[in-house]
Length: 67
Image (cartoon, rainbow, N blue to C red):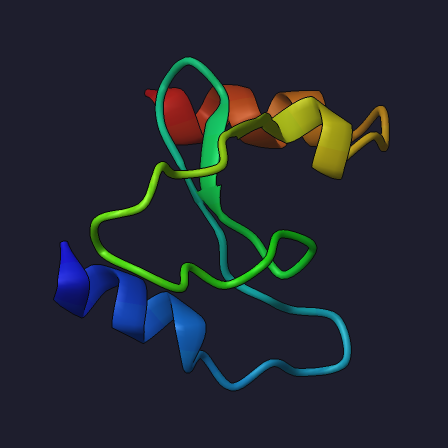
């Protein structure tokens, strides 16, 4: 998990790209709009992905990710 989070944290963003990590229910664990985790032992902050990605087109993207 640490390696995966590290890859997302240090992902080289382009003008229209970024990385995030979300589970199949929509709980977002890593996203550029969320604060970076400060401790492996603290309580994680989970937000619904639709709060971070409110565009109507994102629902079809999320559905394709879940499959």
